[in-house]
Image 1 (cartoon, helix red, strand yellow):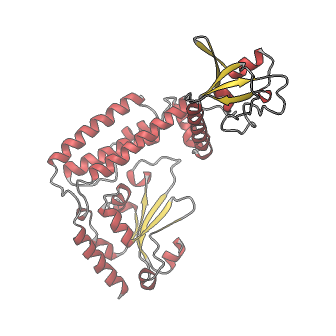
Image 2 (cartoon, rainbow, N blue to C red; image 1 turned 90 degrees about the vertical axis):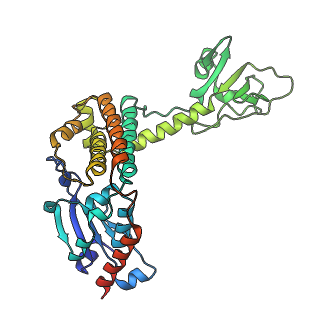
Image 3 (cartoon, rainbow, N blue to C red; image 1 turned 60 degrees about the vertical axis):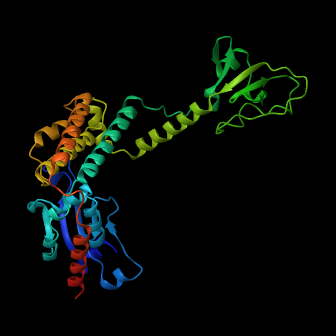
Amino acid sequence: MTIDDIKNKGLLLLECISGSKAYGLETEKSDTDIKGVYYLPRNQYYGLEYIPQVSNESSDIVYFELGRFVELLLRNNPNILELLATPEQCVLYRHPLMDQLTIDLFLSKLCKDTFAGYALTQVRKARGYKKKFVNPVEKERKGVLDYCFIPEGAASVPLKQWLAHRNLEQADCGLVSLPHAKGLYALYNEGDGAGYYRGIISGEEANEVSLSSVPPGKEPKAYLYFNQEGYSAYCREYREYWDWVEKRNEDRYLGNVQHGKGYDAKNMMHTIRLLQVAEEILRDGKLQVRRSNREELLGIKSGAWPYEELLSMTDTLMERIEAAASTSTLPLEPDKHRAEALLVSMREQLYR
């Protein structure tokens, strides 16, 4: 099923402009995000082809099947609750049946965990971004040899430096593991060792050191320590960093470079927005999608705030959310049985 199928077959129940334009936070560069709700034809719903969600390739247009929509409403999913509470000026189409699904049926104290929890994931993203932004990983990838060291007295010397000072090649060396000494090896290098020594690594793509069979009576030239845990951590960091570089939104990245604060300002804007919405829901029992503090939020998005001040703001908002939750008159969670009965009734009306 495609988005065109939904519209051409008359299956559309709700279609709204979402995202920044619904929040009132759009700028000249903002895209138009669309979200909606549809229902499956009777045979498809009762058969083996239930399709819970349909989207375009860029995922800026997403439609949810009616049952999936209600399921996510019951979970107090932030994006789905916001869709149900979309400002009228952003509603492109609403089937009369959708008037039965009112926001007061679903708002509950669950939003403390869903809105605030999602906001904290944005904080973690911003922190991860800051780490990548401040500590870029060089494109030239390090190898096993960069994490090998030769103990000398109370210090250690990088293996590559030790080999260079002795005019030795790693391929002419052999390693033997030492019992009860994880990561520590005896290193051999003899002119007559040809055929015995396999080198310290098997090749540039190796992820571990190689072991050799050493003839009896040979004395090690030195002992080698391979920091395998450090190398594994570096490989993970390298992969994550360059995956991020490949997938990042370049315009957004350059904007963050321009403000120079070293964090993802858009993520932090959405963090503050979500926390403010959560407090309002618990305090007032209402979900206000369109934000009244546009200038403040866009100021955060532009990088006008120091990062530490934003973290302090999130901590303050979390404290206020906890306080609002303790006095809120909202139910602990939505009435599942009532929502399910309403869903069944809507389907019956649609399939008549």
